[in-house]
Length: 340
Ligand code: PHE
Image 1 (tube, rainbow, N blue to C red):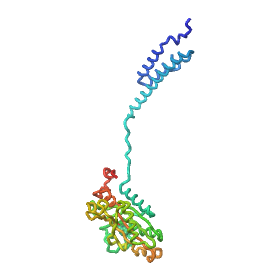
Image 2: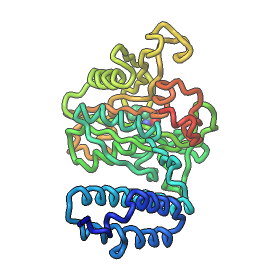
Image 3: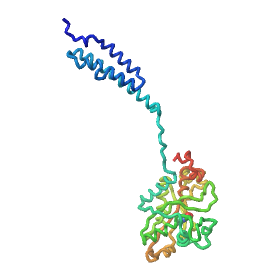
Image 4: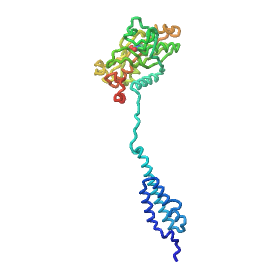
C-alpha cells in the first residue's frame, strides 16, 4: 500500500511554481501583487500548507526550493512596481544637478596673500574705516591746505568734515593713537575712493594695503628690505627693488618703490613698458610732524622713527595675471573671475 500522503504527491509543484511566477510577473498594480501573495504565499496557500505537513526530507527540499522561487518572483515584482510609482513623479536615474562651487574674488585672494606675507613678518592686520573725517584723511596726515585731494573735484565728500577716504593712510594716525606708543608693526587693507575718470587703469573705488612700522632706530634700509621681501613673495624670488624720490605730505623723505619686471627680469617688455621696472605705489619715512599731531611725548621724534607704504591691490592683480583692464575686476563676469 502506498503510504505517501496524496495531498503532497498529487500536486505538480513545478507547474504550481511556474504559475505563481507568471502571476507575479503579470501583476501591474499593488492590488494584483497582494492577490498573488495571498494565493501563493499566504497562510492558507497550497505550498505553505503543504510545507507545514511535510515529514520527509526530500519533499521538504523540493517545497522549500519552490517557495524561494516564488518569494524571489514576489520581491522582483515589488521592486518593479515601486520603481514605477516613483517614476511617475521624477526619473531617479537622471544625473543630478551639481551645485556650482563658488570661489573668492581675485582681489580677496590677493588681499589674503598680502596679509599672509606681513603676518609672517610679525605684523598685525588692523581694520580701518571707509568714511573718514577730514581730520584723519588730511589734517593729521599733514596735507597742506592747497592740496588738490582736499577739493570736491578730486574726492567724494559727504559734508564739510566727512569724506570717503582717499587712501588707507588715515589708519596710520588711528593706529598710533590707539596703541599709544611704539612699537607698531601693522598693515591694513581696504577700499579707497577717488573721483577719477574711469578707464583701463582707473576706477573710482579700489583697494590699497597700507603698512606702518614704528620703533626705535628704524631706517630707510628697513623699508627697502621689507618691500623687497614683500615683492619677492608676490612676484618671485629673483625680484629687485629700487626707490625713486617723490612727495607725500606725511612722509619725509618720500619715495616710490619700483620692482624689477617679473616677466622680462628687467630686459624690457610690454608689461613694464620697456623700462624693466614696475611702479608699485608710495612709501617713505614717517614725517615727524605726524608724531607731533598724535602725541609727541609717546612718540618722541628724537628717539622714534618709522616707515609707511601704500600699494594698490588691483595693480598687483593686473600685473601678475596680465589683465588688460582694471574694470574686469568690477564687472562680475564669471567667465573672467572663474579663471582665478
Ligand atoms: N597714501 C599714498 C597714496 O595713496 C601712498 C603712501 C602710503 C605713501 C604710505 C607713503 C606712505 O598715494
